[in-house]
Length: 117
Image (cartoon, rainbow, N blue to C red; front, side):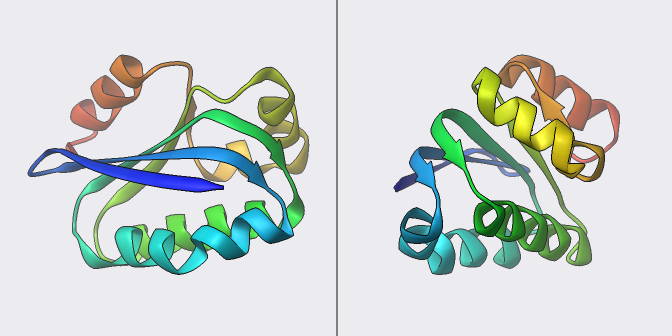
């Protein structure tokens, strides 16, 4: 699992994940992902387009980071999940707790309209 981050502006951070969010993949990114989502009062957009597999441990990390972002006044959303990953997000209920958008533009527009971006 690889993680890249890019500050889009003063209020939005884009995190791109690439690989499998299984036990090994989640362990590889957990500390950096947690630090990125917990340290800034910004909207966090997580690009899931290159995530090919999502296990329960990966969902736990996503949920805990979304909670951390919320506690500091920010908001985390998921962007562009592959169809099978989207199905896991929907069936597990994660998508009812963390908003999921089909593309970056829609996600940024939604965050902007909520006063968070």
